[in-house]
Length: 332
Ligand SMILES: Nc1ncnc2c1ncn2[C@@H]1O[C@H](COP(=O)(O)OP(=O)(O)O)[C@@H](O)[C@H]1O
Ligand SMILES: [Mg+2]
Image (cartoon, rainbow, N blue to C red):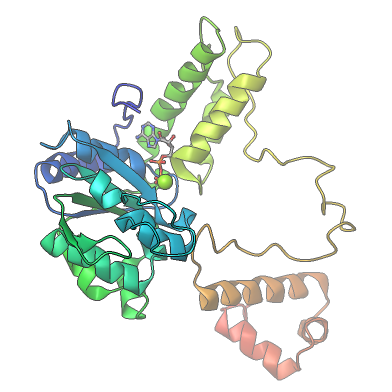
């Protein structure tokens, strides 16, 4: 992937500020941390950091730490000698070696073990490491660019991420605001993705978005950020049968269908949909509190009084009153 194929789109003040920070950080060989929600553009920022740096003509090596099993990650990063473990039939160079002289982008750093984190710290500090199964110390010059979509200081406070590595990585932290916090970028990005896929489809033009579609784009919350926006726009353009007409309706959920399994309440029973922790960490207490409040409100709305509502929830009247007070629902 070259720079030319992936232009960076964005003109919101928050985004321009990030770009400025990137230009400054690029000049340094220090480690840098890119933080942001999934799909917010962390990988693109990492590429920019590399290509604007003095290392631009050296390798940029990427690895997603969450995509690889714990046991393989170490050999993936540091390499191994033949016979280092059962499946290691040949010597293998690791990503740190491959990135020598250039940059190494480690995505989803939070999913590494403390043991791996310790080794990474050593490479950052001294440029030194050993291949698995070897006692020979290798020396490399690698600029580390880490990315995370979780709160690393919080993990460190819980003892699940090494504080010393975090301190070292945090020389410069680039925080990408989520798309919903930079609404000035939504339409330029949407136009960009629409034109790009129109070209791919061999259409000579893109007729733009209707006022209704623009309204939809601007009022959506974009939990999946730029990646979600790209998918929504590309799908809409691709499904659009009259390319001469402006795009009118957008569908945000590709699984939307009356036949979706579980939609009729029979297939999947009445299992509530749980948040997917692989995508995002949650605040369990806050989540449960919120569910409690919603159910209390629902109970009130479908019954004729607090006593009945309490029964619906299997609570005593006093317990239910306590919940109403906690959520400020007593005035109803
Ligand atoms: N500012 C931007 N301009 C153009 N494309 C972007 C921008 N930010 C993100 N993208 C695109 O959105 C998708 C997700 O970005 P990516 O960098 O992979 O996000 P993350 O690594 O944070 O999950 C990619 O296809 C990327 O090219
Ligand atoms: Mg990514």
